Length: 315
Image (cartoon, rainbow, N blue to C red; front, side, top):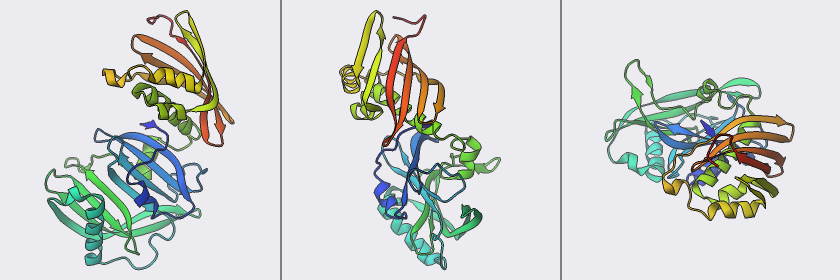
């Protein structure tokens, strides 16, 4: 499981239109569902809030490369106020949503059942049940499951797709990125702020350099950042833009079929500053990066990078 900076995704606007006005992104994580790279976006009241596992929130999961919607959930006060929609209204509402957002699932499907679905969420310090009507489907083409849960007002409270089931011992096999209990079991968020946000920036630094993505790489640096270090006996002392231009001027590692080998070795956070030690392979060269990050109005940014070739590696 890796962290990554928040990025715009195709399904985001439809999803955000359903959220309370004060909801903003608090975290983005990269991971995988059944081997497919995905991105989880988490929203809560107030964009500066720390992720509150078990508390009110909304989450969106999309495929990282294609941006295809994998699922979302909205679990907060008011979402289930009122009488739940009946079977016919729920079936019709689910199908209408799928025709708009996931029409490929309707080529050959079966409705398995329609029933009430409850989730427990901490609201104002107390565990509260948030309910909807769940329409569960099976994709006849691939045997995978998908479902839509309708809130009291007929809007979609939860959608999940491409879920595979392990018959024995009888459990869901697909990772549960939309479920806080699963995230807690993974230890993915709890107690890891601001470390997760910092790792997110460093991962964007890794990814931007590996793919030669100028915008993504430049976004990780403070505008006044300095990059200093050594290529063999050649010293370097560049500003952020000059450094990024130098990186992207060469064919990217990804375009040459390389396997990304970039790792955070250690991290220390003290208030609004952080020091990250990273090991980065570029071709035959292995570098040690010392990254100093500052928390700015725009979030964590790399303020200084010092690097040298790892002792014993090719120079």
